[in-house]
Amino acid sequence: MTRLAPTILLLAGLAQAVACSRVTTVAPEEPIQIQARPPAAPRPGLPAVPQPPPPSRVTASGDLLSLDEALTFDEEGELSSEHQDILAELARWLATNTEVVELTVEVHSIGAGSRRAHTKRSQALATQIVDALVAAGVDAERLVAASVGASEDGQRDVVLRITARAEAAAVEE
Image (cartoon, rainbow, N blue to C red; front, side):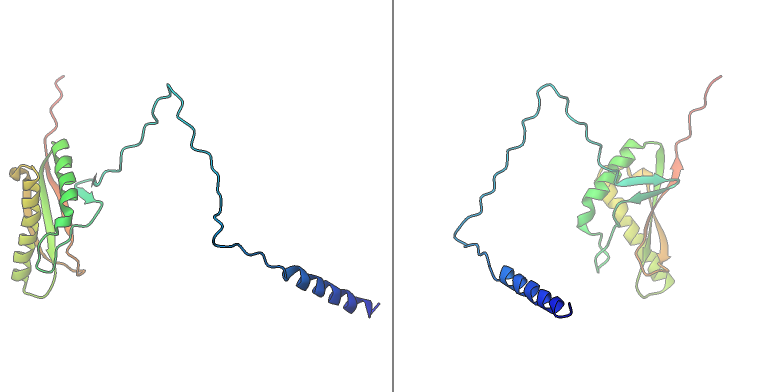
């Protein structure tokens, strides 16, 4: 029995070697044919499937507005032109939400400099955003550019703060 086991293993190994020695090759000149059915035509009379609206790019949480992308400035401190779409969306949001009477734009500055230099730079950055919103159609009287000075975390953080809302109409009894 002890001689039978090695013989069986040897025969099994030879059988595997012979089975693996056959190689099937596909010639590159032969195209591969794939057949698929075209999609079925829509059934007549079925209503269109309603699609959900895209998510809002501007959201309000308490007195703060959040944008789905950060507003950035280039090395010279100029507002990047790539943000025209989000600023237009913010302008539409303000047009829809007329109860927001005043929106304060706060921007932190970064870099070296005195507190006075940071305050001045911060004011200039906030003014650029306000000017862009006015150019997009927002009434300038609804916007305030606020200087908040230097950033503590090294980021030019932009905060959009609702600082005044319209008074709710009194209900007569």
